[in-house]
Length: 94
Image 1 (tube, rainbow, N blue to C red):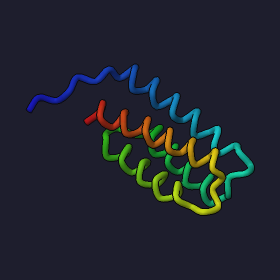
Image 2 (cartoon, helix red, strand yellow):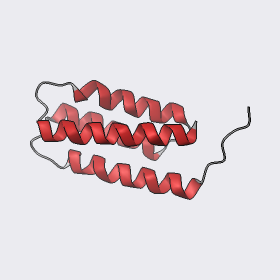
Image 3 (tube, rainbow, N blue to C red):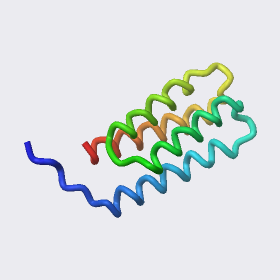
């Protein structure tokens, strides 16, 4: 099966937009420190991502903390949005 043709500039633009959403969660003082740390780690992973495996790792990190009971509901929604965007990006790369 032939590999999908990927527009690198579009992917980089998508990653930058997702990283901006992640920065919004990390800057929110209502979000617990452990969750901000996980979002920061996921952001590092996607910024240096070279394949869909790295994107999967970021999704896993965010999905893991999205169920934290201490997470404010507005931030949970933000995380779900980020996860959704990452899944779309993963499909483009895969």
